[in-house]
Length: 81
Image 1 (tube, one colour):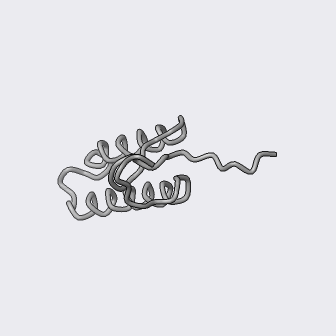
Image 2 (cartoon, rainbow, N blue to C red; image 1 turned 90 degrees about the horizontal axis):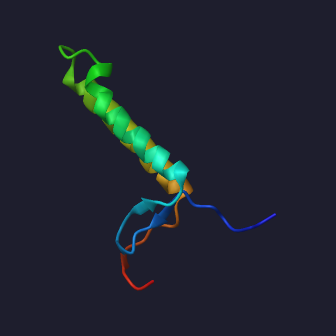
């Protein structure tokens, strides 16, 4: 059994953040954008705008947690490494 860890997201070459490196990462990002796009339809248009904002904040937090768990360690990079 390999001890090498399989990351869904790899660190960006410049700056801070990650980039999807496999289908699981791309699926996570795609699902995030889909949920954010349909958020207005999930809540009635005459409903509370705060509910939509809370939903988007919750989904964003969930994606950040997934990225933190399934990505290379985060640090600021200035290329070359």
